[in-house]
Length: 354
Length: 80
Image (cartoon, rainbow over all chains, first blue to last red; front, top):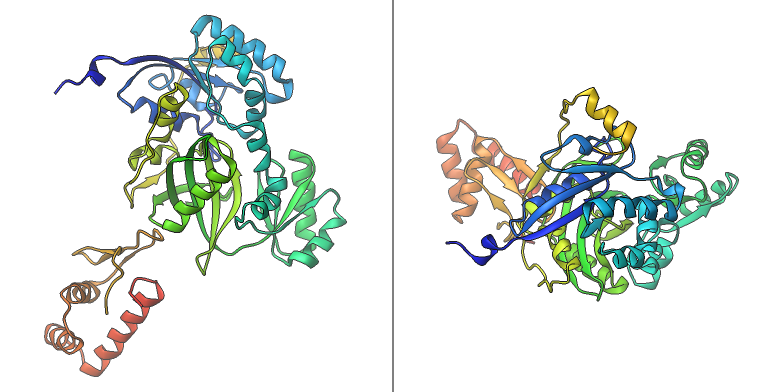
């Protein structure tokens, strides 16, 4: 049967960041893959990259054209300038940023981009800041969500006191990324210096919770309603703590936790809750990532295509919350050598476009 | 002895717990036991059937059966 859905497709130009696909992959490629699977859109996908070796740039069956954008450290003005240039050529309908570090700029520029005709579907600055690692414990206390106790560390001498209060092992975390488990003061100090050099201060010393690592991908409508929740148990974890294989699971307590988080924050857009479920079944929120995770394609495979749903919501459609998903749907990530030509590399490196 | 409602077992002896994502595989005797549990066979009947099929002393198998049930319980697969 031919339906109107197949006859009339929405023409859309969507710009997506996070095209790196290394051992700690960005979500961009998975976001694009999920959106492309939705039959209702006639898509032109614009990749936004930072470095010339982000694999997504060369995936021409997924990405129609890529433009280099300035690093977040260059400031929002610089990003706005570049977005204006790209928009003149591509007439972008929607931008989906996928890196924590760039979200501040995109949230700040939201109104200005919208005036130009570029929509986005992002949390408010207040929501974005409230779930930041450095204030997550306070956030959990406020909303009765279980978050392991932590201390903010600005100098190594503070580590000893933190260890006395929280006890070893401690999880030593960088402000934006990376975490390491320290069993002694020496290990904690080493981690402090490494993370300080990479991400600056403060460093977070968090109480260690032993348990099962679970991630939850969720989508909120900005009014407190949860549109989609998919919990995933990590089956294979890399040395960077990333899930290299995972499986969707059915646990009402995890679904309820995601609903509670989204209701409390009135979260708009995609997010990932990183959970450590203790042996007694208590789900502790270890981190909240303010964007889709790299494994987001699993939500599409399990029957709740979160990226495609976000697109519909960003376009102003009213979307009914999903009610079910396939339990036991697995992903196994793999590495694959993409072959390209030096000419392509030269083009993106030299002109910032491919 | 009953599995929790959501636990999936297959004819090949594979057990999947959708609540935790844990999965297990059992050997041939374990596979037979899973099908007997599904059919609600009594302990006595299970012991009789297994001892008839395999070369095993009744006293030894009773220990193995208890051990198997303990493992299922430890992995949170059985109703309390």
